[in-house]
Length: 614
Image (cartoon, rainbow, N blue to C red; front, side, top):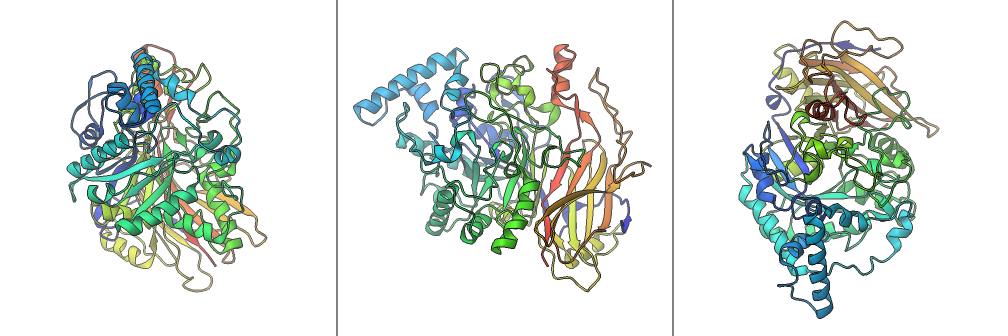
Protein backbone atom coordinates (compact mmCIF):
# COMPACT_ATOMS: atom_id res chain seq x y z
CA UNK A 1 0.00 0.00 0.00
CA UNK A 2 1.01 3.62 -0.42
CA UNK A 3 3.22 4.77 2.45
CA UNK A 4 2.04 8.38 2.60
CA UNK A 5 1.46 11.46 0.50
CA UNK A 6 2.22 15.04 1.30
CA UNK A 7 2.02 18.39 -0.38
CA UNK A 8 4.89 20.78 0.21
CA UNK A 9 5.55 24.40 -0.54
CA UNK A 10 7.65 25.35 -3.56
CA UNK A 11 11.29 24.79 -2.59
CA UNK A 12 14.32 26.28 -4.36
CA UNK A 13 15.11 23.22 -6.48
CA UNK A 14 18.60 24.32 -7.41
CA UNK A 15 19.64 24.42 -3.76
CA UNK A 16 18.43 20.98 -2.71
CA UNK A 17 19.45 18.55 -5.45
CA UNK A 18 22.86 17.72 -4.04
CA UNK A 19 23.87 21.35 -4.70
CA UNK A 20 23.27 20.92 -8.44
CA UNK A 21 21.59 23.37 -10.81
CA UNK A 22 18.54 22.53 -12.88
CA UNK A 23 19.40 23.56 -16.44
CA UNK A 24 17.05 23.65 -19.43
CA UNK A 25 18.14 23.09 -22.99
CA UNK A 26 17.72 21.57 -26.42
CA UNK A 27 20.19 18.97 -27.65
CA UNK A 28 18.72 18.58 -31.13
CA UNK A 29 18.40 21.57 -33.45
CA UNK A 30 18.95 21.98 -37.21
CA UNK A 31 19.89 25.12 -39.11
CA UNK A 32 20.16 26.13 -42.76
CA UNK A 33 23.25 23.88 -43.04
CA UNK A 34 21.11 20.70 -42.86
CA UNK A 35 20.07 19.62 -46.34
CA UNK A 36 16.46 18.83 -45.43
CA UNK A 37 16.07 22.09 -43.50
CA UNK A 38 17.34 24.06 -46.48
CA UNK A 39 15.13 22.20 -48.96
CA UNK A 40 12.12 23.11 -46.82
CA UNK A 41 12.73 26.87 -46.93
CA UNK A 42 15.23 27.47 -44.16
CA UNK A 43 17.57 29.29 -46.53
CA UNK A 44 19.24 31.75 -44.19
CA UNK A 45 18.88 30.98 -40.45
CA UNK A 46 22.32 29.84 -39.35
CA UNK A 47 23.77 28.79 -35.94
CA UNK A 48 24.10 32.46 -34.94
CA UNK A 49 20.32 32.77 -35.33
CA UNK A 50 19.81 29.65 -33.23
CA UNK A 51 22.03 30.80 -30.36
CA UNK A 52 20.55 34.30 -30.32
CA UNK A 53 16.99 32.94 -30.26
CA UNK A 54 17.85 30.43 -27.51
CA UNK A 55 19.19 33.25 -25.32
CA UNK A 56 16.03 35.32 -25.66
CA UNK A 57 16.98 37.77 -28.39
CA UNK A 58 14.51 38.59 -31.19
CA UNK A 59 15.45 37.11 -34.58
CA UNK A 60 14.00 37.03 -38.09
CA UNK A 61 12.08 33.89 -39.01
CA UNK A 62 13.67 32.16 -42.05
CA UNK A 63 10.35 31.66 -43.89
CA UNK A 64 7.82 34.39 -43.19
CA UNK A 65 10.47 36.95 -42.12
CA UNK A 66 8.57 38.20 -39.08
CA UNK A 67 10.36 38.97 -35.82
CA UNK A 68 10.12 36.02 -33.40
CA UNK A 69 11.36 35.50 -29.85
CA UNK A 70 11.42 32.66 -27.33
CA UNK A 71 9.26 33.21 -24.25
CA UNK A 72 11.69 31.69 -21.73
CA UNK A 73 15.38 31.51 -22.73
CA UNK A 74 17.38 28.28 -22.56
CA UNK A 75 20.47 27.53 -20.51
CA UNK A 76 22.18 25.45 -23.20
CA UNK A 77 21.82 24.47 -26.84
CA UNK A 78 23.31 21.92 -29.23
CA UNK A 79 23.25 22.77 -32.94
CA UNK A 80 23.11 19.28 -34.45
CA UNK A 81 23.07 19.61 -38.22
CA UNK A 82 23.09 16.45 -40.33
CA UNK A 83 26.63 15.23 -40.99
CA UNK A 84 25.65 14.02 -44.47
CA UNK A 85 26.27 16.68 -47.16
CA UNK A 86 26.88 19.21 -44.38
CA UNK A 87 26.28 22.62 -45.97
CA UNK A 88 26.55 21.19 -49.48
CA UNK A 89 22.94 21.73 -50.60
CA UNK A 90 23.04 25.34 -49.42
CA UNK A 91 26.37 25.92 -51.17
CA UNK A 92 25.15 24.48 -54.48
CA UNK A 93 22.00 26.60 -54.36
CA UNK A 94 23.86 29.86 -53.78
CA UNK A 95 27.15 29.18 -55.60
CA UNK A 96 26.57 26.27 -57.95
CA UNK A 97 29.76 24.82 -59.39
CA UNK A 98 31.69 28.08 -59.63
CA UNK A 99 34.15 27.34 -56.84
CA UNK A 100 33.92 23.53 -56.77
CA UNK A 101 37.46 22.15 -56.85
CA UNK A 102 36.83 18.70 -58.27
CA UNK A 103 36.89 16.67 -61.46
CA UNK A 104 34.98 17.42 -64.64
CA UNK A 105 32.17 14.91 -63.98
CA UNK A 106 31.58 16.08 -60.40
CA UNK A 107 31.73 19.70 -61.54
CA UNK A 108 28.99 18.98 -64.08
CA UNK A 109 26.96 17.22 -61.40
CA UNK A 110 27.38 20.17 -59.05
CA UNK A 111 26.26 22.61 -61.73
CA UNK A 112 23.17 20.56 -62.52
CA UNK A 113 22.20 20.06 -58.88
CA UNK A 114 22.61 23.78 -58.21
CA UNK A 115 20.38 24.60 -61.19
CA UNK A 116 17.76 22.05 -60.10
CA UNK A 117 17.79 23.33 -56.52
CA UNK A 118 17.19 26.90 -57.60
CA UNK A 119 14.26 25.88 -59.79
CA UNK A 120 12.60 23.69 -57.17
CA UNK A 121 13.31 25.72 -54.03
CA UNK A 122 12.37 29.02 -55.65
CA UNK A 123 9.08 27.44 -56.76
CA UNK A 124 8.38 26.19 -53.22
CA UNK A 125 8.95 22.57 -54.27
CA UNK A 126 12.21 21.85 -52.48
CA UNK A 127 10.55 19.19 -50.31
CA UNK A 128 10.07 17.06 -53.44
CA UNK A 129 13.84 16.77 -53.78
CA UNK A 130 14.18 15.73 -50.14
CA UNK A 131 11.45 13.08 -50.47
CA UNK A 132 12.99 11.74 -53.69
CA UNK A 133 16.17 10.62 -51.88
CA UNK A 134 14.35 8.86 -49.02
CA UNK A 135 14.17 5.04 -48.85
CA UNK A 136 11.36 3.24 -50.62
CA UNK A 137 8.42 2.21 -48.47
CA UNK A 138 8.56 -1.35 -47.15
CA UNK A 139 12.24 -1.87 -48.00
CA UNK A 140 13.92 -4.34 -45.66
CA UNK A 141 16.10 -2.35 -43.23
CA UNK A 142 18.81 -5.01 -42.78
CA UNK A 143 19.09 -5.61 -46.51
CA UNK A 144 19.11 -1.86 -47.16
CA UNK A 145 21.91 -1.32 -44.62
CA UNK A 146 24.00 -4.07 -46.20
CA UNK A 147 23.81 -2.48 -49.65
CA UNK A 148 26.50 -0.03 -50.68
CA UNK A 149 25.47 3.61 -50.68
CA UNK A 150 26.12 3.72 -54.39
CA UNK A 151 26.56 6.78 -56.55
CA UNK A 152 24.68 9.99 -55.93
CA UNK A 153 23.74 12.88 -58.15
CA UNK A 154 25.15 15.13 -55.43
CA UNK A 155 28.94 15.12 -55.77
CA UNK A 156 31.19 14.86 -52.72
CA UNK A 157 32.41 18.31 -51.73
CA UNK A 158 34.74 17.73 -48.76
CA UNK A 159 36.05 21.31 -48.77
CA UNK A 160 32.53 22.68 -48.47
CA UNK A 161 31.71 20.27 -45.62
CA UNK A 162 34.93 21.15 -43.79
CA UNK A 163 34.29 24.87 -44.16
CA UNK A 164 30.70 24.43 -42.91
CA UNK A 165 31.94 22.47 -39.87
CA UNK A 166 34.39 25.29 -39.13
CA UNK A 167 31.54 27.81 -39.27
CA UNK A 168 29.35 25.71 -36.95
CA UNK A 169 32.07 25.07 -34.38
CA UNK A 170 33.35 28.65 -34.47
CA UNK A 171 29.81 29.88 -33.80
CA UNK A 172 29.54 27.56 -30.80
CA UNK A 173 32.76 29.01 -29.44
CA UNK A 174 31.56 32.59 -29.88
CA UNK A 175 28.32 31.99 -27.98
CA UNK A 176 29.65 29.67 -25.29
CA UNK A 177 29.65 31.59 -21.99
CA UNK A 178 30.44 29.15 -19.14
CA UNK A 179 28.22 29.70 -16.13
CA UNK A 180 25.62 31.64 -18.09
CA UNK A 181 24.91 29.91 -21.43
CA UNK A 182 26.48 26.77 -22.87
CA UNK A 183 26.81 26.26 -26.62
CA UNK A 184 27.71 22.59 -27.04
CA UNK A 185 29.16 21.14 -30.22
CA UNK A 186 27.34 18.29 -31.92
CA UNK A 187 25.86 16.85 -35.09
CA UNK A 188 23.39 14.20 -36.25
CA UNK A 189 24.33 10.80 -37.68
CA UNK A 190 21.35 10.01 -39.90
CA UNK A 191 21.18 6.28 -40.58
CA UNK A 192 17.78 5.34 -41.99
CA UNK A 193 18.02 1.93 -43.71
CA UNK A 194 14.75 0.98 -45.35
CA UNK A 195 12.96 3.85 -43.61
CA UNK A 196 13.88 2.62 -40.11
CA UNK A 197 14.84 5.74 -38.21
CA UNK A 198 18.09 4.95 -36.36
CA UNK A 199 19.36 8.53 -36.09
CA UNK A 200 21.64 9.60 -33.25
CA UNK A 201 22.62 13.07 -32.11
CA UNK A 202 26.29 13.14 -31.14
CA UNK A 203 27.40 15.61 -28.45
CA UNK A 204 30.91 16.42 -27.25
CA UNK A 205 32.34 18.43 -24.40
CA UNK A 206 35.17 19.58 -26.69
CA UNK A 207 35.79 23.04 -28.10
CA UNK A 208 36.17 24.35 -31.66
CA UNK A 209 39.91 23.69 -31.76
CA UNK A 210 39.55 20.01 -30.96
CA UNK A 211 36.37 19.58 -33.05
CA UNK A 212 38.10 20.93 -36.13
CA UNK A 213 40.57 18.05 -35.97
CA UNK A 214 37.90 15.76 -37.41
CA UNK A 215 34.87 15.83 -39.71
CA UNK A 216 31.57 14.53 -38.22
CA UNK A 217 30.86 10.83 -38.78
CA UNK A 218 27.78 10.39 -40.98
CA UNK A 219 25.66 7.85 -42.81
CA UNK A 220 28.06 8.22 -45.74
CA UNK A 221 30.72 6.68 -43.47
CA UNK A 222 28.55 3.78 -42.27
CA UNK A 223 24.87 2.96 -41.59
CA UNK A 224 25.78 0.78 -38.58
CA UNK A 225 25.67 2.21 -35.03
CA UNK A 226 28.57 0.03 -33.84
CA UNK A 227 30.77 1.71 -36.47
CA UNK A 228 29.75 5.08 -35.05
CA UNK A 229 30.71 3.91 -31.55
CA UNK A 230 34.09 2.69 -32.78
CA UNK A 231 34.71 6.06 -34.43
CA UNK A 232 33.74 7.83 -31.21
CA UNK A 233 36.22 5.70 -29.24
CA UNK A 234 39.04 6.41 -31.68
CA UNK A 235 38.27 10.14 -31.90
CA UNK A 236 37.96 10.48 -28.13
CA UNK A 237 41.37 8.86 -27.71
CA UNK A 238 42.89 11.16 -30.32
CA UNK A 239 41.39 14.43 -29.04
CA UNK A 240 40.88 13.83 -25.32
CA UNK A 241 37.23 14.91 -25.69
CA UNK A 242 34.27 12.93 -24.42
CA UNK A 243 31.24 12.08 -26.59
CA UNK A 244 27.80 10.57 -26.23
CA UNK A 245 25.29 9.51 -28.88
CA UNK A 246 21.57 10.04 -28.25
CA UNK A 247 19.02 7.86 -30.10
CA UNK A 248 15.99 9.84 -31.23
CA UNK A 249 12.57 9.17 -32.69
CA UNK A 250 12.71 5.51 -31.80
CA UNK A 251 8.92 5.55 -32.31
CA UNK A 252 9.50 5.30 -36.08
CA UNK A 253 12.43 2.86 -36.10
CA UNK A 254 10.35 -0.11 -37.35
CA UNK A 255 11.39 -1.97 -34.22
CA UNK A 256 15.15 -1.71 -34.84
CA UNK A 257 16.26 0.97 -32.37
CA UNK A 258 16.04 -1.27 -29.29
CA UNK A 259 16.08 -4.70 -30.90
CA UNK A 260 17.38 -8.04 -29.60
CA UNK A 261 19.52 -8.35 -32.73
CA UNK A 262 22.00 -5.93 -34.21
CA UNK A 263 21.35 -4.24 -37.54
CA UNK A 264 23.77 -6.76 -39.05
CA UNK A 265 21.38 -9.52 -37.94
CA UNK A 266 23.56 -10.87 -35.14
CA UNK A 267 22.23 -11.62 -31.63
CA UNK A 268 23.06 -8.91 -29.12
CA UNK A 269 26.14 -10.04 -27.23
CA UNK A 270 27.84 -8.93 -24.04
CA UNK A 271 30.56 -6.81 -25.70
CA UNK A 272 28.03 -5.07 -27.97
CA UNK A 273 25.83 -4.38 -24.94
CA UNK A 274 28.75 -2.91 -22.96
CA UNK A 275 29.81 -0.64 -25.81
CA UNK A 276 26.29 0.60 -26.49
CA UNK A 277 25.61 1.25 -22.82
CA UNK A 278 28.78 3.36 -22.60
CA UNK A 279 28.21 5.56 -25.65
CA UNK A 280 24.40 5.81 -25.39
CA UNK A 281 23.44 6.48 -21.75
CA UNK A 282 20.29 8.49 -22.61
CA UNK A 283 17.60 8.56 -25.28
CA UNK A 284 15.17 11.16 -26.56
CA UNK A 285 11.71 10.23 -25.27
CA UNK A 286 9.79 13.16 -26.76
CA UNK A 287 10.26 15.60 -29.64
CA UNK A 288 8.43 17.28 -32.53
CA UNK A 289 7.87 13.95 -34.36
CA UNK A 290 5.94 12.51 -31.45
CA UNK A 291 6.32 10.70 -28.16
CA UNK A 292 8.43 7.57 -27.67
CA UNK A 293 7.47 6.52 -24.13
CA UNK A 294 5.01 3.79 -25.06
CA UNK A 295 2.01 3.00 -27.27
CA UNK A 296 -1.52 1.76 -26.47
CA UNK A 297 -0.82 -1.48 -28.31
CA UNK A 298 2.20 -2.09 -26.06
CA UNK A 299 0.79 -0.73 -22.77
CA UNK A 300 -2.98 -1.35 -23.04
CA UNK A 301 -3.60 -0.84 -19.30
CA UNK A 302 -2.12 2.68 -19.35
CA UNK A 303 -4.83 5.27 -20.16
CA UNK A 304 -2.16 7.90 -20.88
CA UNK A 305 -0.20 5.76 -23.37
CA UNK A 306 -1.83 7.31 -26.44
CA UNK A 307 -0.02 10.64 -26.32
CA UNK A 308 1.22 12.56 -29.36
CA UNK A 309 1.39 9.35 -31.39
CA UNK A 310 3.19 9.88 -34.71
CA UNK A 311 2.52 7.06 -37.23
CA UNK A 312 4.64 8.27 -40.18
CA UNK A 313 7.87 6.62 -41.30
CA UNK A 314 10.58 8.67 -43.03
CA UNK A 315 10.33 7.15 -46.51
CA UNK A 316 8.84 7.56 -49.96
CA UNK A 317 5.17 6.68 -49.83
CA UNK A 318 3.14 5.45 -46.89
CA UNK A 319 2.98 2.08 -45.21
CA UNK A 320 0.96 0.86 -42.25
CA UNK A 321 2.38 1.97 -38.93
CA UNK A 322 3.13 -1.09 -36.79
CA UNK A 323 4.27 -0.24 -33.25
CA UNK A 324 6.89 -2.66 -31.97
CA UNK A 325 8.68 -3.16 -28.67
CA UNK A 326 11.92 -1.92 -30.25
CA UNK A 327 10.30 1.43 -31.00
CA UNK A 328 9.45 2.65 -27.50
CA UNK A 329 11.40 3.32 -24.35
CA UNK A 330 9.25 1.59 -21.74
CA UNK A 331 9.34 -1.71 -23.66
CA UNK A 332 13.06 -1.08 -24.30
CA UNK A 333 13.69 -0.81 -20.55
CA UNK A 334 11.85 -4.09 -20.06
CA UNK A 335 13.82 -5.72 -22.87
CA UNK A 336 16.99 -4.46 -21.23
CA UNK A 337 16.14 -6.33 -18.03
CA UNK A 338 15.82 -9.54 -19.99
CA UNK A 339 19.10 -8.99 -21.84
CA UNK A 340 20.82 -8.22 -18.54
CA UNK A 341 19.60 -11.53 -17.12
CA UNK A 342 21.04 -13.35 -20.14
CA UNK A 343 24.24 -11.36 -20.72
CA UNK A 344 25.07 -9.77 -17.40
CA UNK A 345 24.93 -6.32 -19.08
CA UNK A 346 21.93 -4.12 -19.84
CA UNK A 347 22.37 -2.23 -23.15
CA UNK A 348 19.11 -0.36 -22.59
CA UNK A 349 19.76 1.19 -19.18
CA UNK A 350 18.65 4.54 -20.58
CA UNK A 351 17.99 7.93 -19.11
CA UNK A 352 15.40 10.21 -20.72
CA UNK A 353 15.63 13.64 -22.28
CA UNK A 354 13.42 15.65 -24.61
CA UNK A 355 14.51 17.99 -27.41
CA UNK A 356 12.88 19.58 -30.43
CA UNK A 357 14.46 18.32 -33.69
CA UNK A 358 13.35 21.66 -35.10
CA UNK A 359 14.64 22.42 -38.62
CA UNK A 360 13.88 26.14 -38.41
CA UNK A 361 17.00 27.11 -36.38
CA UNK A 362 14.52 28.02 -33.62
CA UNK A 363 14.40 25.72 -30.54
CA UNK A 364 10.66 26.17 -30.17
CA UNK A 365 8.82 23.86 -27.74
CA UNK A 366 6.31 26.39 -26.38
CA UNK A 367 2.76 25.38 -27.35
CA UNK A 368 1.51 28.91 -27.98
CA UNK A 369 4.80 29.99 -29.59
CA UNK A 370 5.51 26.98 -31.79
CA UNK A 371 7.27 27.62 -35.11
CA UNK A 372 6.81 24.15 -36.59
CA UNK A 373 9.12 21.32 -37.53
CA UNK A 374 10.05 22.88 -40.88
CA UNK A 375 10.16 26.53 -41.85
CA UNK A 376 7.29 26.03 -44.33
CA UNK A 377 5.01 24.80 -41.52
CA UNK A 378 5.49 27.92 -39.42
CA UNK A 379 2.27 29.53 -40.60
CA UNK A 380 -1.20 28.01 -39.98
CA UNK A 381 -2.22 28.13 -43.65
CA UNK A 382 0.46 25.57 -44.50
CA UNK A 383 -0.08 23.17 -41.62
CA UNK A 384 -2.68 21.02 -43.35
CA UNK A 385 -0.45 20.42 -46.37
CA UNK A 386 0.89 16.88 -46.45
CA UNK A 387 4.54 16.31 -47.23
CA UNK A 388 4.24 13.43 -49.69
CA UNK A 389 1.36 13.51 -52.19
CA UNK A 390 -1.38 13.30 -49.60
CA UNK A 391 0.19 10.42 -47.67
CA UNK A 392 2.71 11.94 -45.28
CA UNK A 393 2.35 13.97 -42.09
CA UNK A 394 1.13 17.54 -41.82
CA UNK A 395 2.33 20.40 -39.67
CA UNK A 396 -0.53 19.70 -37.27
CA UNK A 397 0.72 16.14 -36.77
CA UNK A 398 3.83 17.61 -35.16
CA UNK A 399 4.19 18.06 -31.42
CA UNK A 400 5.43 21.30 -29.83
CA UNK A 401 8.03 19.31 -27.87
CA UNK A 402 10.41 18.86 -26.03
CA UNK A 403 13.04 20.03 -23.53
CA UNK A 404 16.05 18.46 -21.84
CA UNK A 405 16.28 19.07 -18.07
CA UNK A 406 19.73 18.49 -16.61
CA UNK A 407 20.84 18.43 -12.96
CA UNK A 408 24.43 19.68 -13.36
CA UNK A 409 27.07 21.10 -11.04
CA UNK A 410 27.74 24.00 -13.42
CA UNK A 411 26.43 25.40 -16.67
CA UNK A 412 29.40 24.19 -18.70
CA UNK A 413 30.01 21.71 -21.48
CA UNK A 414 31.81 19.32 -19.17
CA UNK A 415 29.18 19.39 -16.40
CA UNK A 416 26.26 18.97 -18.79
CA UNK A 417 27.87 16.00 -20.53
CA UNK A 418 28.72 14.44 -17.16
CA UNK A 419 25.06 14.77 -16.07
CA UNK A 420 23.94 13.09 -19.29
CA UNK A 421 26.45 10.28 -18.69
CA UNK A 422 25.17 9.60 -15.17
CA UNK A 423 21.56 9.96 -16.41
CA UNK A 424 20.69 12.65 -13.85
CA UNK A 425 18.43 14.21 -16.45
CA UNK A 426 14.79 14.18 -17.49
CA UNK A 427 12.44 15.20 -20.28
CA UNK A 428 9.44 17.45 -20.59
CA UNK A 429 7.15 18.01 -23.53
CA UNK A 430 7.87 21.74 -23.36
CA UNK A 431 6.89 23.26 -20.00
CA UNK A 432 9.55 23.85 -17.31
CA UNK A 433 8.09 21.30 -14.88
CA UNK A 434 10.58 21.01 -12.04
CA UNK A 435 11.12 17.43 -10.85
CA UNK A 436 13.35 16.23 -8.06
CA UNK A 437 13.66 12.52 -7.24
CA UNK A 438 15.60 10.26 -4.91
CA UNK A 439 15.18 6.52 -4.45
CA UNK A 440 16.34 4.48 -1.48
CA UNK A 441 15.37 2.18 1.37
CA UNK A 442 14.87 4.55 4.30
CA UNK A 443 14.35 8.09 3.03
CA UNK A 444 13.43 11.04 5.26
CA UNK A 445 10.06 12.74 5.45
CA UNK A 446 10.32 16.19 3.90
CA UNK A 447 9.15 19.14 5.99
CA UNK A 448 7.57 22.27 4.53
CA UNK A 449 10.89 24.12 4.74
CA UNK A 450 12.95 20.96 4.29
CA UNK A 451 16.03 22.02 2.38
CA UNK A 452 18.17 20.12 4.87
CA UNK A 453 15.84 17.14 4.54
CA UNK A 454 16.42 17.08 0.79
CA UNK A 455 20.14 17.06 1.46
CA UNK A 456 19.55 14.10 3.76
CA UNK A 457 17.58 12.38 1.00
CA UNK A 458 20.48 12.94 -1.39
CA UNK A 459 22.79 11.32 1.12
CA UNK A 460 20.43 8.41 1.84
CA UNK A 461 19.37 7.60 -1.72
CA UNK A 462 20.27 7.81 -5.38
CA UNK A 463 19.02 10.42 -7.86
CA UNK A 464 17.19 9.72 -11.10
CA UNK A 465 19.38 7.66 -13.40
CA UNK A 466 20.97 5.76 -10.53
CA UNK A 467 20.94 2.21 -9.23
CA UNK A 468 19.57 1.40 -5.79
CA UNK A 469 22.25 0.31 -3.32
CA UNK A 470 22.04 -3.06 -1.65
CA UNK A 471 18.95 -3.57 0.47
CA UNK A 472 19.49 -1.90 3.84
CA UNK A 473 17.76 -4.70 5.74
CA UNK A 474 15.43 -7.59 5.01
CA UNK A 475 11.78 -6.68 4.63
CA UNK A 476 12.27 -3.18 3.24
CA UNK A 477 10.90 -2.12 -0.13
CA UNK A 478 12.25 0.64 -2.37
CA UNK A 479 11.02 4.16 -1.67
CA UNK A 480 10.81 7.05 -4.09
CA UNK A 481 10.77 10.61 -2.81
CA UNK A 482 9.56 12.95 -5.55
CA UNK A 483 8.53 16.56 -5.80
CA UNK A 484 7.12 18.25 -8.90
CA UNK A 485 6.52 21.96 -9.38
CA UNK A 486 4.64 23.58 -12.20
CA UNK A 487 6.25 25.79 -14.81
CA UNK A 488 6.21 29.26 -13.19
CA UNK A 489 4.32 30.64 -16.22
CA UNK A 490 2.48 27.41 -17.02
CA UNK A 491 -0.27 25.09 -15.96
CA UNK A 492 -0.97 23.46 -12.61
CA UNK A 493 -0.26 19.77 -12.11
CA UNK A 494 -2.80 16.95 -12.33
CA UNK A 495 -0.83 14.03 -10.84
CA UNK A 496 2.46 12.27 -10.23
CA UNK A 497 2.75 8.65 -11.32
CA UNK A 498 5.42 6.01 -10.77
CA UNK A 499 5.91 3.64 -13.69
CA UNK A 500 7.39 0.31 -12.65
CA UNK A 501 8.71 -2.45 -14.89
CA UNK A 502 10.06 -5.77 -13.69
CA UNK A 503 11.11 -9.23 -14.76
CA UNK A 504 9.92 -12.25 -12.82
CA UNK A 505 11.96 -15.32 -11.97
CA UNK A 506 10.62 -17.13 -15.04
CA UNK A 507 11.82 -14.32 -17.35
CA UNK A 508 8.42 -12.71 -17.95
CA UNK A 509 8.23 -8.91 -18.09
CA UNK A 510 5.55 -6.79 -16.44
CA UNK A 511 4.66 -3.13 -16.06
CA UNK A 512 2.36 -1.11 -13.83
CA UNK A 513 1.53 2.57 -13.39
CA UNK A 514 0.84 3.86 -9.86
CA UNK A 515 -0.83 7.17 -9.07
CA UNK A 516 1.14 8.48 -6.09
CA UNK A 517 0.06 12.13 -5.68
CA UNK A 518 -2.73 14.11 -7.26
CA UNK A 519 -4.74 17.30 -7.05
CA UNK A 520 -8.24 17.72 -5.69
CA UNK A 521 -10.42 15.35 -3.68
CA UNK A 522 -10.53 12.56 -6.24
CA UNK A 523 -10.38 8.95 -5.10
CA UNK A 524 -8.90 5.97 -6.90
CA UNK A 525 -11.08 3.10 -8.03
CA UNK A 526 -9.31 -0.07 -9.17
CA UNK A 527 -6.08 1.91 -9.47
CA UNK A 528 -7.60 4.58 -11.72
CA UNK A 529 -8.27 8.23 -10.92
CA UNK A 530 -11.15 10.24 -12.39
CA UNK A 531 -9.95 12.87 -14.90
CA UNK A 532 -8.84 16.16 -13.40
CA UNK A 533 -11.26 18.09 -15.61
CA UNK A 534 -10.50 20.89 -18.05
CA UNK A 535 -10.76 24.68 -18.00
CA UNK A 536 -9.94 25.11 -21.70
CA UNK A 537 -12.48 27.20 -23.64
CA UNK A 538 -12.46 25.54 -27.07
CA UNK A 539 -13.87 28.69 -28.69
CA UNK A 540 -11.15 31.02 -27.45
CA UNK A 541 -8.24 28.83 -26.36
CA UNK A 542 -8.27 30.44 -22.92
CA UNK A 543 -7.70 28.40 -19.73
CA UNK A 544 -6.91 28.98 -16.07
CA UNK A 545 -5.34 27.33 -13.03
CA UNK A 546 -8.53 26.97 -11.03
CA UNK A 547 -7.93 23.21 -10.97
CA UNK A 548 -4.75 21.27 -10.26
CA UNK A 549 -1.96 22.12 -7.84
CA UNK A 550 1.24 24.16 -8.27
CA UNK A 551 3.25 21.59 -6.28
CA UNK A 552 2.82 17.87 -5.70
CA UNK A 553 5.06 15.57 -3.71
CA UNK A 554 5.08 12.04 -2.36
CA UNK A 555 7.14 9.55 -0.44
CA UNK A 556 6.03 6.31 -2.09
CA UNK A 557 6.97 2.75 -1.26
CA UNK A 558 6.59 -0.10 -3.73
CA UNK A 559 3.59 -2.14 -2.50
CA UNK A 560 4.39 -5.06 -4.81
CA UNK A 561 8.12 -5.42 -4.24
CA UNK A 562 9.75 -8.81 -4.60
CA UNK A 563 13.45 -8.71 -3.69
CA UNK A 564 14.16 -11.54 -6.16
CA UNK A 565 12.92 -9.52 -9.17
CA UNK A 566 14.97 -6.99 -11.14
CA UNK A 567 13.02 -3.77 -11.66
CA UNK A 568 13.11 -0.16 -12.80
CA UNK A 569 11.06 2.84 -11.70
CA UNK A 570 10.53 6.22 -13.34
CA UNK A 571 8.19 9.11 -12.63
CA UNK A 572 5.69 10.67 -15.01
CA UNK A 573 4.17 14.03 -14.10
CA UNK A 574 1.03 15.27 -15.85
CA UNK A 575 -0.25 18.83 -16.15
CA UNK A 576 -3.92 19.77 -16.30
CA UNK A 577 -5.25 20.06 -19.88
CA UNK A 578 -4.13 23.06 -21.90
CA UNK A 579 -4.73 24.05 -25.55
CA UNK A 580 -2.66 22.30 -28.20
CA UNK A 581 -1.10 24.39 -30.97
CA UNK A 582 -3.57 22.81 -33.39
CA UNK A 583 -6.52 24.36 -31.50
CA UNK A 584 -4.86 27.77 -31.43
CA UNK A 585 -4.24 27.56 -35.19
CA UNK A 586 -7.84 26.50 -35.87
CA UNK A 587 -9.16 29.44 -33.85
CA UNK A 588 -6.83 31.83 -35.68
CA UNK A 589 -8.02 30.46 -39.05
CA UNK A 590 -11.68 30.56 -38.05
CA UNK A 591 -12.01 26.79 -38.47
CA UNK A 592 -13.94 24.33 -36.35
CA UNK A 593 -10.88 22.14 -35.82
CA UNK A 594 -7.37 21.51 -37.12
CA UNK A 595 -8.02 18.59 -39.47
CA UNK A 596 -9.18 16.38 -36.61
CA UNK A 597 -6.08 16.92 -34.46
CA UNK A 598 -6.50 17.13 -30.67
CA UNK A 599 -7.74 20.41 -29.24
CA UNK A 600 -6.05 19.91 -25.86
CA UNK A 601 -3.26 17.88 -24.32
CA UNK A 602 -1.77 17.12 -20.93
CA UNK A 603 1.86 18.18 -21.09
CA UNK A 604 4.17 15.98 -19.05
CA UNK A 605 7.59 15.23 -17.64
CA UNK A 606 9.44 11.89 -17.65
CA UNK A 607 12.28 11.32 -15.22
CA UNK A 608 15.15 9.01 -15.96
CA UNK A 609 14.59 5.65 -14.26
CA UNK A 610 16.25 4.17 -11.21
CA UNK A 611 17.08 0.45 -11.23
CA UNK A 612 17.02 -2.34 -8.68
CA UNK A 613 19.01 -5.55 -9.15
CA UNK A 614 18.96 -8.41 -6.60
